[in-house]
Length: 391
Image (cartoon, rainbow, N blue to C red; front, top):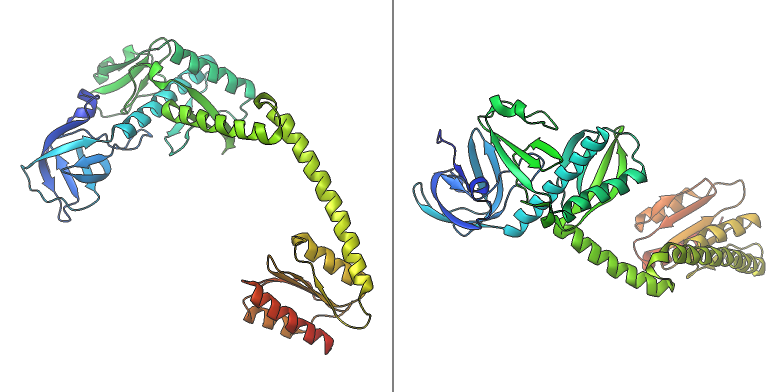
């Protein structure tokens, strides 16, 4: 392997989308390669790697290892050391990761400057990104303050400035966190008027590039707080989705977007009242069906359309009248069995249910089983009635 590190075009020419490089090494699988220079940022500092194409082959991952940058390809590369290869960067992915990482620096900077709260870790996720902070309780008022501060920096187009510092000069900068050790040159990103932080990642040149920032949720995590946030193109796309959803909900609930919570509560109240009435009516219906059944014989009670609650209601009604019976619910399909009070059901019932693919269980005097299809459930219902009649 080469003892000299590659030229990192993602640092020296961050706006470059296409270039070429010489192949330095390729492994036996022809899928792991080292170049003399690269457009592709390797994963690190909570940020994922760049992707794109090398010699027309898709880049699967990029990592830094022992001073080298190793590119893993999705398929074998037909080339040898010294060959020159075309590099094509996935610019959309680079932009997205730079936006989320830069938003994290803004968020962490305001947390530290205004409240002395350090950021413990950062993760750039597929939909939302997160930071963990050393704070157990995170009030809504702090969420609103941080949203306002970060979006204020965006509105002012606050610059991001890169400083390249030898280790002996690092103490001249008011860093928010300690720098990594054993670096010949330290990369420190300054957010003018707010923050200095050592970081190997890629960033925007101005906060204005982010356009929009929003804290999505906060949660308690291992005695600390995890903050989920979104910025840049992701935030704009999220706003559009939420705007469409709010418009649809507004029409359905007949409530203006700013009063959707009130409309939803009215709808939920009506739904609870309707469910309560349905439960009462179901109880009356089942009771009358059971009362009308002939005494002395097991009852076959079909409650299809009543929902899962119908099984429980039917079994309760049969048991209350000290009868035996089979309650069926075709749409699930589920079968409930009720035996004589104080007696266990015949063991062959459970064995037959399992033979037909049923899953479930119950108490000694009752059984509830779910089947893979209505045919199996109907077979078991007929079988169970026969067993109960012959007891």
